[in-house]
Amino acid sequence: MPLRASFQEELRALEALLDEQAELVLRSLRGAVEALVARDGELADEVIAFDDDVDAVYLRTEQAVELLLARQTPVAGDLRLVLAILHSNLHLERMGDLCTTVAKLTKLSADLPSDEVLLGAFREMGERAEEMVRVALRAFHERDVELAESLIGLDELIDRSNRRVVSRLLELGPERLEWGLRAIVVSRCLERVGDHAVDIGEQAAFLATGEFREFGDASHDPRPLA
Image (cartoon, rainbow, N blue to C red; front, side, top):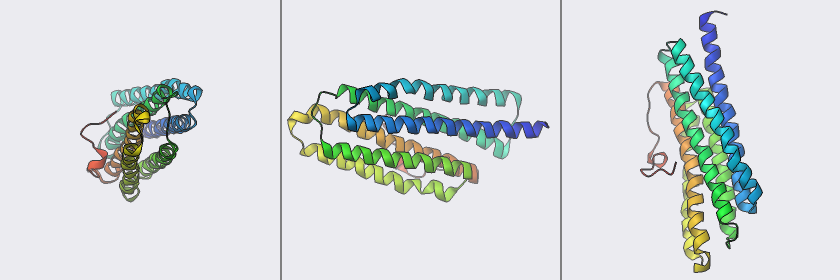
């Protein structure tokens, strides 16, 4: 196989690893939200253990990038792709960490009185976050700036849900204070998954245009959780 053809195969393999990691993260996200809503401690344990699989793909991607850079000298668009994969790989790994945090909070809150309204809101936030991850990866592979920028509107929907969670918590009585405090962290975790999806969208736009720009402040909170 010609050297150039081999190099392009390696680049495609790196993008495939991103897809593999994204699917693992989406599985963690769905599991974490379901465990939270159903108050399922066993499922929460599975999500926590599953983070090892997410980390394993993260490390495989990092090592594959290091090997490629050691053997090749990518320039221009190829170099942009390698850099974008490095950044997106990290954002996906952090999403996995956030899902693990939700699962751990679920276990810690198992014996506390919850609130059905908030549990419904968390399910909705999880579904929106999942949609954002899928949109971000599609924009990445298709080098679609317009699709990447659509993440801004989707992110605002999650941000609004997060604000409604805080408002709802203020309505609850003191007997749910401990659960409420943990619910705020859960809401923030789900919001941050959306923020990381926006960051991947920014990498997609960078790939398409050759210029990096931030879509908005919403995806770059000065006090990130993960």
